[in-house]
Length: 480
Image 1 (tube, helix red, strand yellow):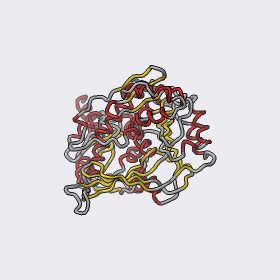
Image 2 (cartoon, rainbow, N blue to C red):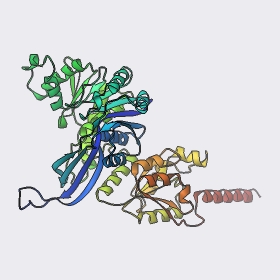
Image 3 (cartoon, rainbow, N blue to C red):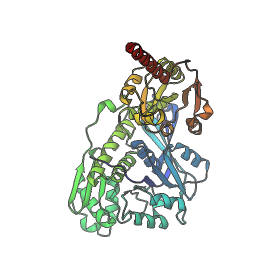
């Protein structure tokens, strides 16, 4: 599928809350009841609902992602804000009540129980100016409805209805939410939701005796919803079977789940479908933003969702960048310390090697943020780099001290740091921490900047200058 970059950000609209996983192990049942005893518990917090959809969108394709969601004023809302990755811009809507938290207790990676807290809902009122502005700039909109009143706000629905005429709108509906606005490019209910929505339509009784097979039933439901919602298409997600896309009447096709890649699945990890629907919707919305046809957008959603279920990551091994984020995720799951550093590393020399060795000793993994060729040229001049980025990656990756390398295109690695969220950011001692543009970002994310001693007299620039002097001297001697 050929894709082109869309002209605006992906704007995710909906209900956001906190997902809290309490992960541990269980080897016995409690003596007072037949329930597992979970011990060695660690807490993992992430944004849930529309917050998860926005997080996954930013992971799938780093760039502009904006989350428009009601945010309460309690302490849990502060945790929700902190759980969002730096690449997601939050535009809050008024809310009332306490931030919703969904707590899952898991043993050996498998859910044991879920405990829900909070009752926050969208507060009625006019659409804030900031929200109206970001919606006007959207390249695509993903409505992630979790039944907390956001999609029923009259001012917001009016704006979404207007947007749907010119901008791709993907609508992930909820039984307790409002229906998609007319003109929605694709609605993405799961098969149980589609059955319930279709059964509630005014003419549902007429089709009660229609096909009983799961796929036939889903196709009939999707076709009915296309007409009722005045949508261009309805894609019913079918779990392990993939997604069934209907554009109305008898036109429907199944997009199956691609064969799994065993090498991409972490050893011992149990498949976890929680969040797969958000991943599907985010991937489809990004594809539509970038000009994909509806069929291709649904296929992209199925592919990414299947990877997410198997690996827990939306972006599956897209070269060095994807590997870096996968490494960081695994280290964090073990409670380890993530160390990162950055630079051009053009003509790797002893100073680089010693810096990387010391940096790796500070934590449990070392991520090297590497300037791309274009980035090096903008910093060093048209005659640099001397070594292409692919070869610089190979050389760095061969060092025992380097766990993974991620390439960035900008002059500074600030955007990459926002995604990596390292515990420690390391630079050579020829810098002052206060002068580094990365320091403020690292501090805001809760990390620290560490300056390490640098071997005196070692630099790529000096090596190049010495080589040029020697070459000129040799040519002079040969000429004489």
